[in-house]
Image (tube, rainbow, N blue to C red; front, top):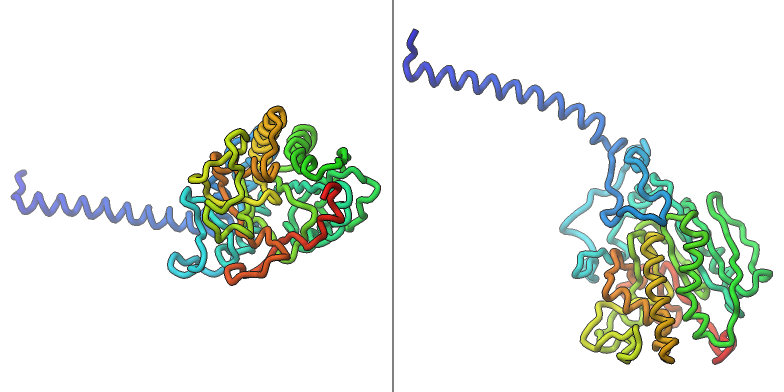
Length: 359
């Protein structure tokens, strides 16, 4: 049997039409299954942090995919926009790390994502000498505002363990007191901070926590501080220098120091009062800074701002994966600026001549 050219075209079109129709039916059924099961907001597997990678020290960040799924309740939150948001501040660094400001994240959504991971956050604080007097306010305000409803372990380093106050802690939150020696020089206490944190991570913290924040005790929490602050390596922009140019940063400028940063280099000036991230990454930071501090000591040089100078050197060449705005480390001596919508954590006003041993 012979077909005309038109008939052949008709048959070919008919076959193509049938294939497309079958494909459409299959796609519709499969898509319905996806929308009803895997892509529904009640069961969606959401990537939590692009920076996450395997770690030998952190015990449980990388759990099974099932454990990272958001709880069954439907999430209701405002639809994100790519056109409307903060325009008065920069919210991302040149190396694409987020800078966290109020109004750049949804707090409920972010906390929900991380709570499904059942993580533990370590928090180190030094209460040496007369600085132990700040510990009660630090802990009591932390219980109100810091990582609420998360598992938190406070590690208090002090030479006065008997003076550590008794504070009511919420469920899932614990406090460990670790005795350390005092000193007649506050600079020495500051310089030994990296060594002590490194040792504590090796001996204890690596088995008990996933993330860690290293904070100053002479500070208080004032407002919510949640999971938006978590990342692989986290630093805070210093409240006194976030409007300054790099030539005004108080980096260590002497080439003889291992903390040296040339005048024409530098991204931001980071406050030594706050740094954090994965336990493994903070361990590496403290180990490197400790080694550099000890090398400087052998060469009879002390960096301008002790561990803060070495922290800035490290973070210049090991870029943080997330930056916290000055909201997270304000100074009560500084007048609040229009960019800072909320003060979450701040250094309190004190008399250094009264609390420091050699001032």
